[in-house]
Length: 344
Image 1 (tube, rainbow, N blue to C red):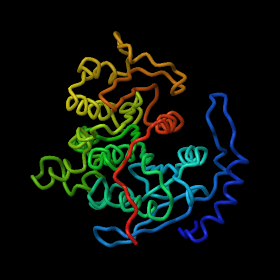
Image 2 (image 1 turned 30 degrees about the vertical axis):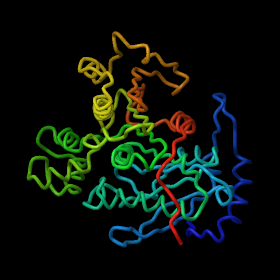
Image 3 (image 1 turned 180 degrees about the vertical axis):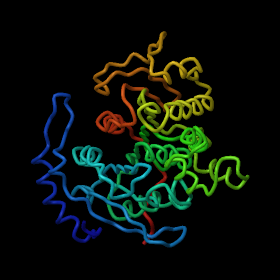
């Protein structure tokens, strides 16, 4: 990997651009796809945390135009047990195909220590990392997109709730919305699994252990903050089989949506509908909004609801994400954010 050196980035990116255009292919669905083996190299960058002054890493790809003209910035967040080195090429390829800046931050790595797992340090790392990119390139601050899957979906929802004015749109996939409930899910039978132990290591305790520990669970759980998204375009997604074949039950995504819907006085997904979907069954009386062509996600959609600028989708699948429709949706969103370049 290369260090983040903007003085050399423009010359390097000229060569990258030639490679990028050479491997662009139009698929039958009309979407740009890239051969993952031919993707340009990601560059390692470092920045200083504004909270503890530590040096933190990230990976980045900068298209040549971003040094001269406003360019969308796409931040993708690694999964629960990953870090900034995690291979997320399927998402990186979408950014390259669209000529977006691609940023892959570490935010304190895997979720097994107090500094990680949605802590204030982890959240601030994402903001500090974005600020450095804005200061160093020409970011279109009305097109700053955030996405993540699993643990990255958890963090995407959390960032949306804490900092809705810092993003133009957010797409979260199969994310954990309530850490206490997730701990209990992975402690069935009285024996905590690896995920439960990781949550405990991050929060320094188990749910109900003390007011201090419970405060940690609340601060790190999107369900307690996501109602603050306001008019931020938010795309919530879950596969109907998750929690059966995967690690995060669909209620985490649905409950997050219902929290927003309640705040916006929009119709909730009913307990009966939640129970049916949780049993991996289609709704007996789907609403008109639930009838979505399979071509949108290239798979069946069981539920699609809206509350203001937030939408939720339950699709045929498990613990997974679908980058093409996510980035297609993000590309349609434009919304001013509060970012400005730092004064030199």
